[in-house]
Length: 153
Image 1 (cartoon, rainbow, N blue to C red):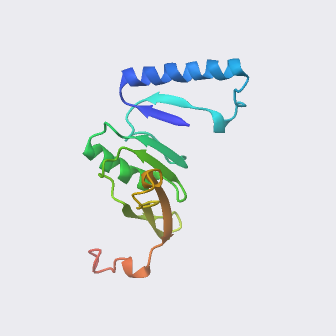
Image 2: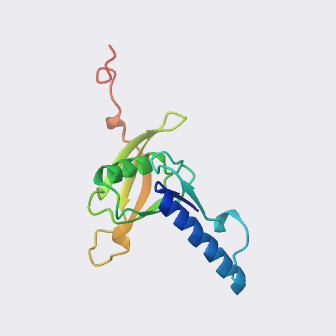
């Protein structure tokens, strides 16, 4: 996993805690095997500039993020994440839309509708209310612009 933190102070704290966790796990004999699925790193940087295209699961703690940043981040995730990806967002404070659709054109010219939607709107399930899933479906042909609509004559 990769963590991205803009604040140098929080990034240093995160790296320190991660090292401490590594020492504790090593001392207990419960250290996971070294492979890519059990590696965690923290990077200092802007989350809007981070490459998330290989991510399949995103955990986002947005409790102190401004509303505009949250909205831009939701658009970035639906644009860059692959279908089937999941986002767990704590603290969106209602700024994320429960469902967001974005057209994507594949290399072979096929257009898909990528959909980022909340896994559940059930107020009783606090955990599922924080999970969004990226899905896709072929875009219906009636959504394709005609030559007149696209400005061509």
